[in-house]
Length: 389
Picture 1 (spheres, rainbow, N blue to C red):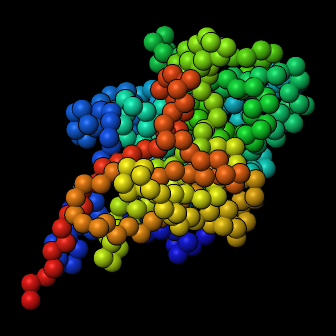
Picture 2: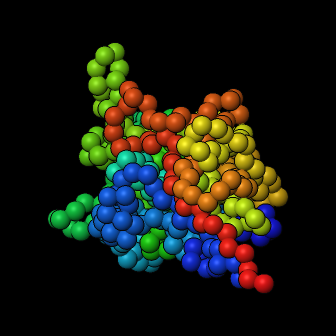
């Protein structure tokens, strides 16, 4: 990887362009949700009250999201784990084991370039869409740990338990997935993020990483991998991260799971006499083949320039072809607005089989999760003032 392979960082919105008085970047305002009801600052404060912090716009148009400022969604508890006494329990498998941290760190590692995204990111309540990021995670695969235990044994499902406990007040977070889902996603137990050991904030000393599945399953501060012979039905699986789907004329509760096909414009900056719209596209069952951008609220669509994630990592010895499955690619579109004014901009992803991101969510699905609709933004284009002369 080289810096030349990435699109440039955004400049501050308030910074003036040369002597013209025109800004270097424009604000992209959500069209619904808390930012439109209360304003941006209050909306961010309300998200922090429920332990959510979003990435900044410039971070969401880069192939690799910087670790500093990486989004978080947790339960207010960031445990201090002693590496000397840390143990990872693996139970319910052919040969249960307990691994100390040096034993875990000594196992062969694999890399995953993985989009992490809150299942409710960009819903009609939040309005914004910054609860996502993409990092390079490394650690032993779950399959490596199971092989160490002599195989999964009777286990067909697994529950993953975190160490973020508050004693009798709150148990550690837990979430369950089937062995088939974990195998399809090529899950790993990550011990590094972007080439560095996990920070306390990001789950030290280990966490589950499950590419292509929403990040409520990416359990941090991992302390116990529990093999089970039936699905894990903890509160987060059974009630919290669920939608209602209409099936056979009835509404049925369904767990959120695989990330749908989506994209978002996150940044708008000055480029010559025009503006560069930038963002990312990810999710779905197949790789992203193209992105289209609309600057007139969906009346017309234009093809953006796509930087495929596979090309970015083509020469990285850590990352193989399968290790980027589901990862986001970034895009840019040079926009020449016909006149100053307010514009409604958005993007839609297209996969290799020609499937196009939907303009709105499926009417047969009700709930806050798997928000695949186009993320519209309003942008105010100023009149360009020429320098006096």
